[in-house]
Length: 247
Ligand code: UDP
Image (cartoon, rainbow, N blue to C red):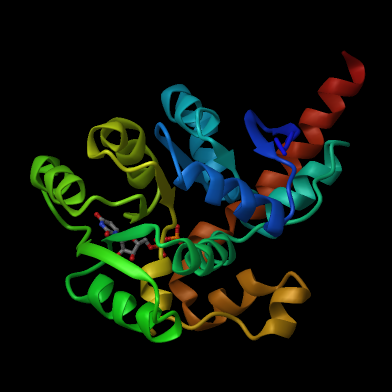
Protein backbone atom coordinates (compact mmCIF):
# COMPACT_ATOMS: atom_id res chain seq x y z
CA UNK A 1 0.00 0.00 0.00
CA UNK A 2 1.40 3.37 -1.02
CA UNK A 3 1.36 5.78 1.87
CA UNK A 4 0.29 9.29 1.05
CA UNK A 5 1.97 11.77 3.37
CA UNK A 6 0.86 15.34 3.72
CA UNK A 7 3.54 18.03 3.85
CA UNK A 8 2.94 21.12 5.92
CA UNK A 9 5.02 24.24 5.43
CA UNK A 10 6.44 25.69 8.64
CA UNK A 11 8.49 28.86 8.14
CA UNK A 12 9.66 27.83 4.68
CA UNK A 13 10.39 24.17 5.44
CA UNK A 14 7.86 21.54 4.31
CA UNK A 15 7.46 18.93 7.05
CA UNK A 16 5.93 15.48 6.64
CA UNK A 17 2.92 15.24 8.95
CA UNK A 18 3.63 11.70 10.13
CA UNK A 19 3.73 9.65 13.28
CA UNK A 20 6.96 7.89 14.26
CA UNK A 21 5.56 4.56 13.03
CA UNK A 22 4.60 6.03 9.64
CA UNK A 23 8.03 7.64 9.32
CA UNK A 24 9.83 4.36 10.06
CA UNK A 25 7.62 2.47 7.56
CA UNK A 26 8.50 5.01 4.85
CA UNK A 27 12.18 4.90 5.84
CA UNK A 28 12.21 1.12 5.55
CA UNK A 29 10.72 1.33 2.06
CA UNK A 30 13.23 3.96 0.92
CA UNK A 31 16.10 1.89 2.39
CA UNK A 32 15.12 -1.05 0.19
CA UNK A 33 15.70 1.09 -2.92
CA UNK A 34 15.87 1.51 -5.84
CA UNK A 35 17.30 5.01 -6.05
CA UNK A 36 18.61 7.37 -3.41
CA UNK A 37 16.94 9.62 -0.91
CA UNK A 38 17.79 11.29 2.35
CA UNK A 39 15.99 12.13 5.57
CA UNK A 40 16.34 15.41 7.46
CA UNK A 41 15.21 16.09 11.03
CA UNK A 42 14.98 19.88 11.36
CA UNK A 43 14.62 21.52 14.76
CA UNK A 44 13.93 25.28 15.10
CA UNK A 45 17.65 26.02 14.85
CA UNK A 46 17.85 24.27 11.49
CA UNK A 47 14.68 25.98 10.23
CA UNK A 48 16.27 29.30 11.19
CA UNK A 49 19.40 28.41 9.22
CA UNK A 50 17.17 27.63 6.23
CA UNK A 51 15.57 31.07 6.57
CA UNK A 52 19.02 32.60 6.10
CA UNK A 53 20.21 30.38 3.22
CA UNK A 54 17.98 29.58 0.26
CA UNK A 55 20.20 26.76 -1.03
CA UNK A 56 20.07 25.04 2.37
CA UNK A 57 16.28 25.43 2.47
CA UNK A 58 16.09 23.71 -0.92
CA UNK A 59 18.24 20.84 0.35
CA UNK A 60 15.89 20.34 3.31
CA UNK A 61 12.79 20.45 1.12
CA UNK A 62 14.40 18.03 -1.33
CA UNK A 63 14.54 15.28 1.30
CA UNK A 64 12.47 12.11 0.99
CA UNK A 65 11.32 12.66 4.56
CA UNK A 66 11.34 15.88 6.57
CA UNK A 67 10.73 15.03 10.23
CA UNK A 68 9.81 17.55 12.95
CA UNK A 69 12.56 17.02 15.50
CA UNK A 70 11.87 19.18 18.49
CA UNK A 71 8.84 20.51 20.28
CA UNK A 72 9.55 24.02 18.95
CA UNK A 73 8.56 23.00 15.42
CA UNK A 74 5.34 21.43 16.74
CA UNK A 75 4.50 24.65 18.64
CA UNK A 76 5.23 26.79 15.57
CA UNK A 77 2.99 24.55 13.45
CA UNK A 78 0.14 25.06 15.90
CA UNK A 79 0.68 28.83 15.97
CA UNK A 80 0.58 28.86 12.15
CA UNK A 81 -2.74 27.00 12.14
CA UNK A 82 -1.24 23.95 10.38
CA UNK A 83 -0.78 21.57 13.34
CA UNK A 84 1.38 18.47 13.03
CA UNK A 85 0.56 15.05 14.52
CA UNK A 86 3.51 15.45 16.85
CA UNK A 87 7.25 15.54 17.03
CA UNK A 88 9.35 12.74 15.56
CA UNK A 89 12.77 12.85 17.23
CA UNK A 90 15.55 11.84 14.86
CA UNK A 91 16.94 9.35 17.36
CA UNK A 92 13.58 7.55 17.69
CA UNK A 93 13.33 7.33 13.91
CA UNK A 94 16.89 5.99 13.79
CA UNK A 95 16.20 3.37 16.46
CA UNK A 96 13.00 2.26 14.71
CA UNK A 97 14.85 1.92 11.43
CA UNK A 98 17.72 -0.01 13.05
CA UNK A 99 15.19 -2.53 14.43
CA UNK A 100 13.74 -2.99 10.93
CA UNK A 101 17.19 -3.36 9.33
CA UNK A 102 18.05 -6.06 11.88
CA UNK A 103 15.01 -7.97 10.55
CA UNK A 104 15.41 -7.34 6.83
CA UNK A 105 19.21 -7.69 6.65
CA UNK A 106 19.72 -4.17 5.30
CA UNK A 107 23.32 -2.92 5.75
CA UNK A 108 23.99 0.11 7.93
CA UNK A 109 27.03 2.43 7.83
CA UNK A 110 27.74 4.92 10.63
CA UNK A 111 29.40 8.20 9.66
CA UNK A 112 30.31 11.02 12.01
CA UNK A 113 31.38 12.17 15.49
CA UNK A 114 34.88 12.08 17.00
CA UNK A 115 37.24 9.17 16.19
CA UNK A 116 36.17 6.01 18.04
CA UNK A 117 32.58 7.11 18.71
CA UNK A 118 31.01 5.46 15.63
CA UNK A 119 32.81 2.18 16.47
CA UNK A 120 31.49 2.25 20.04
CA UNK A 121 28.00 3.11 18.77
CA UNK A 122 28.22 0.16 16.34
CA UNK A 123 29.23 -2.22 19.14
CA UNK A 124 26.35 -1.04 21.33
CA UNK A 125 23.80 -1.33 18.51
CA UNK A 126 25.06 -4.84 17.72
CA UNK A 127 24.63 -5.71 21.39
CA UNK A 128 21.02 -4.60 21.22
CA UNK A 129 20.32 -6.17 17.80
CA UNK A 130 22.58 -9.21 17.23
CA UNK A 131 21.23 -9.74 13.69
CA UNK A 132 22.06 -6.17 12.60
CA UNK A 133 24.72 -5.79 9.90
CA UNK A 134 26.91 -2.73 10.37
CA UNK A 135 29.04 -2.69 7.25
CA UNK A 136 31.40 0.14 8.22
CA UNK A 137 32.12 3.25 10.27
CA UNK A 138 34.02 6.51 9.76
CA UNK A 139 34.57 9.52 12.00
CA UNK A 140 33.19 12.94 11.06
CA UNK A 141 36.43 14.93 11.00
CA UNK A 142 37.70 14.23 7.47
CA UNK A 143 38.89 16.86 4.99
CA UNK A 144 38.44 14.95 1.76
CA UNK A 145 35.06 13.33 1.04
CA UNK A 146 36.36 11.12 -1.80
CA UNK A 147 37.77 8.28 0.32
CA UNK A 148 34.67 8.32 2.56
CA UNK A 149 32.39 7.96 -0.46
CA UNK A 150 34.56 5.07 -1.71
CA UNK A 151 34.45 3.34 1.68
CA UNK A 152 30.64 3.53 1.81
CA UNK A 153 30.40 2.26 -1.77
CA UNK A 154 32.83 -0.58 -1.12
CA UNK A 155 30.92 -1.59 2.01
CA UNK A 156 27.69 -1.93 -0.01
CA UNK A 157 25.74 0.16 2.51
CA UNK A 158 21.97 0.42 2.13
CA UNK A 159 21.55 3.03 4.85
CA UNK A 160 24.01 5.60 6.21
CA UNK A 161 23.52 7.57 9.43
CA UNK A 162 25.27 10.90 8.76
CA UNK A 163 26.13 12.64 12.03
CA UNK A 164 28.20 15.72 11.16
CA UNK A 165 25.98 18.35 12.77
CA UNK A 166 23.81 20.83 10.86
CA UNK A 167 24.11 22.25 8.22
CA UNK A 168 27.13 20.15 7.25
CA UNK A 169 25.36 16.77 7.31
CA UNK A 170 22.44 17.85 5.10
CA UNK A 171 24.75 19.47 2.56
CA UNK A 172 26.96 16.36 2.59
CA UNK A 173 24.06 13.95 2.02
CA UNK A 174 22.65 15.98 -0.87
CA UNK A 175 26.04 16.42 -2.53
CA UNK A 176 27.68 13.05 -2.01
CA UNK A 177 24.82 10.67 -1.22
CA UNK A 178 24.00 9.65 -4.81
CA UNK A 179 27.65 8.67 -5.53
CA UNK A 180 27.79 6.21 -2.64
CA UNK A 181 25.28 3.70 -3.98
CA UNK A 182 23.42 3.79 -0.65
CA UNK A 183 19.62 4.00 -0.87
CA UNK A 184 19.00 6.10 2.20
CA UNK A 185 20.94 8.60 4.29
CA UNK A 186 19.68 10.07 7.54
CA UNK A 187 21.09 13.30 9.04
CA UNK A 188 21.13 12.76 12.79
CA UNK A 189 23.34 15.32 14.57
CA UNK A 190 24.66 14.03 17.88
CA UNK A 191 22.95 10.64 17.76
CA UNK A 192 26.15 8.56 17.55
CA UNK A 193 27.31 10.15 20.82
CA UNK A 194 24.07 8.94 22.40
CA UNK A 195 24.39 5.41 20.98
CA UNK A 196 28.01 5.31 22.12
CA UNK A 197 26.84 6.17 25.64
CA UNK A 198 28.74 9.48 25.81
CA UNK A 199 25.60 11.62 26.01
CA UNK A 200 22.47 10.62 27.93
CA UNK A 201 18.94 11.28 26.74
CA UNK A 202 16.34 12.76 29.06
CA UNK A 203 14.29 10.30 31.15
CA UNK A 204 11.06 9.19 29.41
CA UNK A 205 8.86 11.43 31.61
CA UNK A 206 10.77 14.54 30.53
CA UNK A 207 10.49 13.44 26.89
CA UNK A 208 6.71 12.93 27.23
CA UNK A 209 6.29 16.39 28.75
CA UNK A 210 8.16 17.91 25.82
CA UNK A 211 10.98 19.02 28.11
CA UNK A 212 13.87 17.12 26.56
CA UNK A 213 15.39 20.42 25.42
CA UNK A 214 15.40 21.65 29.05
CA UNK A 215 17.11 18.45 30.24
CA UNK A 216 19.80 18.86 27.60
CA UNK A 217 20.26 22.48 28.66
CA UNK A 218 20.74 21.49 32.32
CA UNK A 219 23.38 18.93 31.38
CA UNK A 220 25.11 21.14 28.81
CA UNK A 221 24.63 24.81 29.88
CA UNK A 222 26.81 25.88 26.95
CA UNK A 223 23.74 25.21 24.76
CA UNK A 224 22.01 28.26 26.26
CA UNK A 225 23.20 30.62 23.52
CA UNK A 226 21.75 28.33 20.85
CA UNK A 227 18.49 27.84 22.74
CA UNK A 228 17.88 31.49 23.54
CA UNK A 229 16.81 31.82 19.91
CA UNK A 230 13.86 29.42 20.35
CA UNK A 231 11.35 31.92 21.79
CA UNK A 232 12.25 34.24 18.90
CA UNK A 233 11.39 31.40 16.52
CA UNK A 234 7.88 31.21 17.98
CA UNK A 235 7.52 34.98 17.80
CA UNK A 236 8.51 34.79 14.13
CA UNK A 237 5.86 32.10 13.62
CA UNK A 238 3.21 34.32 15.23
CA UNK A 239 4.23 37.21 12.96
CA UNK A 240 4.06 34.92 9.93
CA UNK A 241 0.56 33.86 11.00
CA UNK A 242 -0.43 37.50 11.22
CA UNK A 243 0.86 38.13 7.70
CA UNK A 244 -1.00 35.10 6.33
CA UNK A 245 -4.17 36.22 8.11
CA UNK A 246 -4.05 39.61 6.42
CA UNK A 247 -3.21 38.20 3.00
N1 UDP B 1 30.61 16.53 14.11
C1 UDP B 1 31.35 15.86 13.16
N2 UDP B 1 32.11 16.59 12.29
C2 UDP B 1 32.16 17.94 12.32
C3 UDP B 1 31.38 18.63 13.28
C4 UDP B 1 30.60 17.89 14.16
O1 UDP B 1 31.33 14.65 13.11
O2 UDP B 1 32.86 18.53 11.50
C5 UDP B 1 29.78 15.74 15.04
C6 UDP B 1 30.01 16.01 16.51
O3 UDP B 1 31.12 15.27 16.97
C7 UDP B 1 28.68 15.53 17.09
C8 UDP B 1 27.69 15.87 15.98
O4 UDP B 1 28.45 16.06 14.81
O5 UDP B 1 28.72 14.13 17.25
C9 UDP B 1 26.88 17.14 16.20
O6 UDP B 1 26.40 17.17 17.47
P1 UDP B 1 25.40 18.32 17.95
O7 UDP B 1 25.10 18.00 19.36
O8 UDP B 1 25.92 19.67 17.57
O9 UDP B 1 24.18 18.01 17.03
P2 UDP B 1 22.66 18.35 17.26
O10 UDP B 1 22.03 16.99 17.47
O11 UDP B 1 22.54 19.29 18.41
O12 UDP B 1 22.30 18.96 15.93
